[in-house]
Length: 358
Image 1: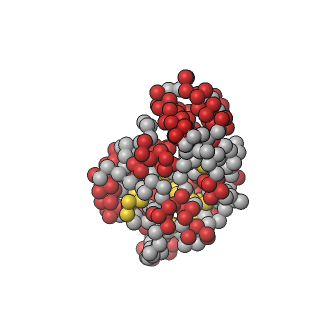
Image 2: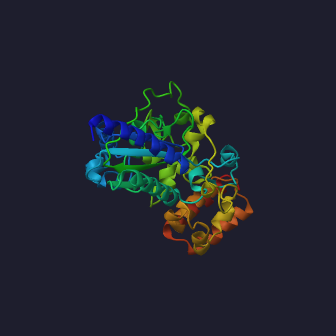
Image 3: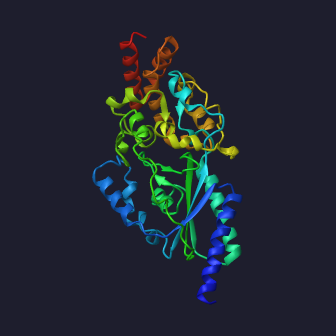
């Protein structure tokens, strides 16, 4: 086939890929090359500063994270896709202000996004295979050493905000990312040329623990999402009072972002809140035994932290609450059979409440 004809066919194929992606429930798809040298250098500096905490997997695979062709030999292009997840009729601000309520990151209220998106990506790859025949590919959804945010920026899905999340001018930042690595020489999309954060520092100003240490620089060791999800040991004492009622993740920086006024609620039923997790009290969740925790978090990303860390997080939130007889009684009742990790946080919570005369 003449080169010009090949180019024309791949241009048409790229348009088809984006149409198929929308049909499969993705809100946007973009295509980029594999050159991530600048992102790789930023990653190296970040790890060298220790800002990744104990997330050793961020550097475990070395250059494979920023050289896609090393992770999947033969990769020439990356198809980056996004899918909205914000629940409709949601008022996260009201939940955050209610000290008796449990605040859970909006992305974790529904079914685990990994499986849903991976299946959709596989469907997209199959459609692509039907059009071009056998080709090399591999799909990813936050499941391998992939620099998904820099890839999304290069593919034109948005720009990196000062809070280090991707922002889309028409859709805000309440979306998941997924990728298809492929050996097809598809035409690449232009990245968003200008960042549109300007002088705004809303995300930095609102961060309870000051984890955004500078524009575009996050210290994960201070981030409530890391503290409640990734950290296995005790939560640093000095950060506990700053966590409020946040027990799994923290959306403060995105809630403060002016661009999220353009966010579109999800149309995916699987992303809608389950088990009433969008309107549940801390006390109710603290009373779940391990069996109930496993049953109620089945199919949820929350399950991966396990019952022990779940109780650890809620104990801290109860220590930050308005207390009351029921709260004190629940903490004291849990203490005798609690693990060392949970017991230490329960005792902290009791001291907090007692010092406030609750």
